[in-house]
Length: 394
Image 1 (cartoon, one colour):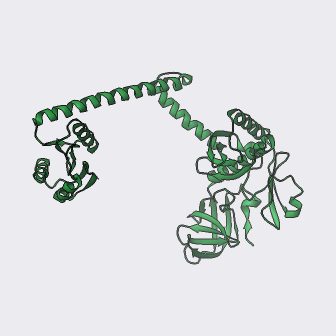
Image 2: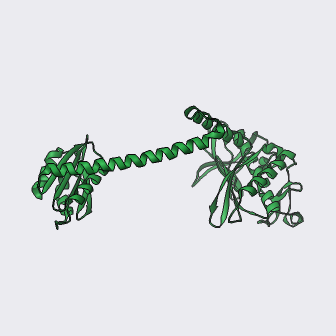
Image 3: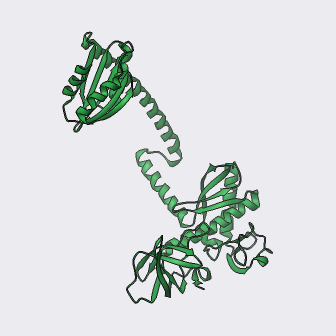
């Protein structure tokens, strides 16, 4: 059986081993070694990364009782031995996050009678699902303090293999899902858990834990958090954001929220006022176009680089004011034409039929309601010519 160095000594970041076999499956090319320090994905913890003889190990999975190292390319012919190097930063990070999760789950379970139902160690943050439908800020604050006290107290983290029957003598966090020998991760007086993940020697190496917030997930609470160096990384990110914010809004940090909130409210009020003024301008433009038409039944206008939404708004404004006209609005752009074809309520005609006859002129697409159609296509002819062809059909 392969010797799993990641269990015997999780701090081993380099090792030498012999190749047992190299093969390929649906995931790709892989190699199996006599012994390995590469941790395979499992139990919510991602796999290790690193190299074998300088060849990148992109994935590690335990399949059919063998640890398969999925490599980016084949080793030179005749290679029998490899030197493995583990991505140390990734390994230590996973050890910190996984151990932190054990502590957090233990505090919620023991102190607040809220068990953990699942665990996911993500690239940036970690989540656990807690078996409760609501959770208060006060409870979260108290739990976070207790978690960090356990980290500060620097309890030893022990691992041991023993038969499942003997393991049941411990106060296990949840029933064992395996038979035969089981690996226990033990934080004395804090947590006793069947676990196949990598962990540090003591809780102090977790450094710190910070809760980032929670969301409802079905009938449970999903808590997001970070531990160890990720706490420093998050602090650094937030500090950079605050520093940049203070350059834009020159206020003390404690006043930034109020200042930005007032700015957002002011911006919303300005946007509302701008929208009202734009509507007034649109109505004025509609009245001007109607007046200039001097009673013509077909009103046509060609614009340059006017968005289709603006054509639609103008079209609705005109047809709401005059009920017995046809309307042709065209926007010429660099390589395409867009249009709106509409009619007033007093006219009984399906504008989709007109659109179908005119769309081939610009190799276009479009459609809408019987009284209001929009579309667009290539600028094969200019806007005025297109509008005239539509008018001829009307």
